[in-house]
Length: 460
Image 1: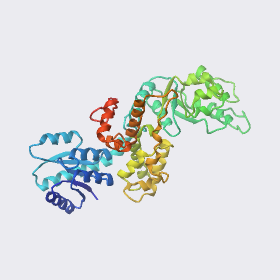
Image 2: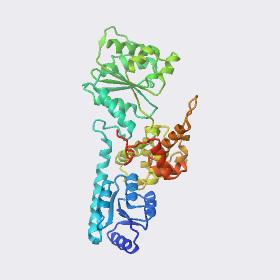
Image 3: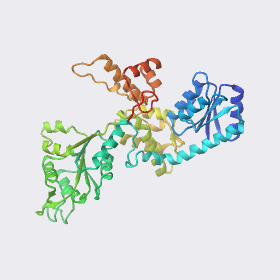
Image 4: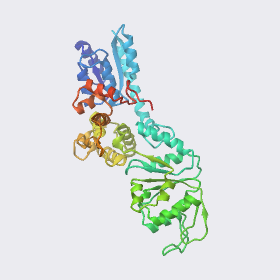
């Protein structure tokens, strides 16, 4: 059923419009003031919002901005009195699809709502594709945060060279996808070949990397081509390289230095042109100090270092990633799930995701599989049976041994509260127990910026 929120403070007009909308088979929620409209947006997902520009408690502009923040595909129509066209223009700039001047014919409003519903349906069909290709050259990476945009720029620069790259980051953050993007955006003609160094015993790993000749060891009944040969003129991605033994490290170092190696049990030198990209979730400098990793190999690998931040540090990416996985699994499982409730969005944003993107992907797959509704709700997500807000990790504030100014501590607390609440200043203020006015003052004082804000807009 097509769902419409109608926000109008004049009772007779609101009831007349609502009755006409219901006659067309639309589900209509009525709001007599701005606060009621904002509350309705928190409870339910709407296809179209029709709001008067001037409303008590909260303006039509605030309703518009909140609706678009909760779900970017929600279409908003603004009703405004004749002679105040400037307010309609302001609404259009803020994201309204259209406006209608009072007084108006009911048929005219119904036609505009029908067009808005058609636009909403079209966006639903296209949105899964749009999210996958956020940036044309990174088809498999979904990321809208400033951190990911910076990574995209680094990938574009690195891809033009043949320099080795060391990708750092926690398990499940998407290091393999970053490595693949480096290869895809390069001019290398060969394949993208990957190998998990933690998955195999030392002897088996060497055989996988370098290949072996027939009879090289018991059970070697035929010649085997290794990953280095398979990646010739392409890219070899070595995941979890911190788990590689010292003897295997020495052989990898030789390939990097001399561009050649021998298969196990062989004597012929095989030359290769391979671009190496490595990844690890370990601190390699600490491993060097313990004698577990070769320092010379570390500096060979670390020509370019690229760190992928954990999901909890780029909360802007959580909901786009969740919607991307939802679209994918709904299609694969042939389930009619098409969105997330506002409560589910808040739960996703407030959970800390210790397993990063991998945990999020598994969570959404399970939720889509079990869901019997059109939208995933909090109960479907099953986030450990805990209140998602309880998973916020003490604001992740760490005091240095020599101390720090109290103002800097306050600034860090405000930044973390904004991240947790998806950079919505009102919600962050409530989270910290301060007024919106005080929050705005602190933001100006500490010169905090963010791309989505009209004021204090961060230019990336």
